[in-house]
Length: 123
Image 1 (cartoon, rainbow, N blue to C red):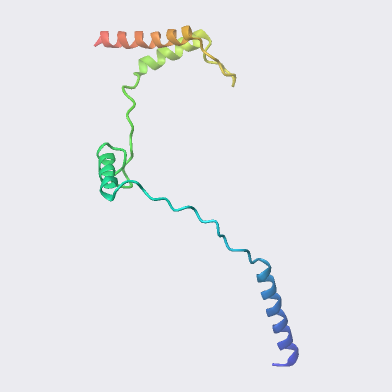
Image 2: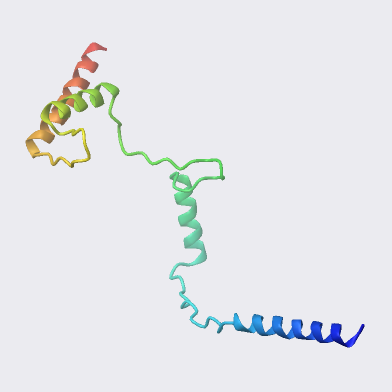
């Protein structure tokens, strides 16, 4: 190689090293505090077994965790409550929020209960 090529390579190497040092940063020294559990290993395992048995932890990746919130409403209840809310003006056709009075809320719930009672009587 000739001298001109060596000088070009050396200059490029120095430029690359200089550019790399421009991006160097100070090390991160703020580490999170170490916390220690107050539970024993056996207590943690017992809690995990209990949670799995109650359905809060799935057994595998394909299993879904379902939470029960009590008896859901029937279709008839939902339809009756929706119609009652629309009749009372509780459902708006725009993005306006509608605050219900306690009497309106009670009337809507009563409509749903009446629909449920009719459905049960029909059986």
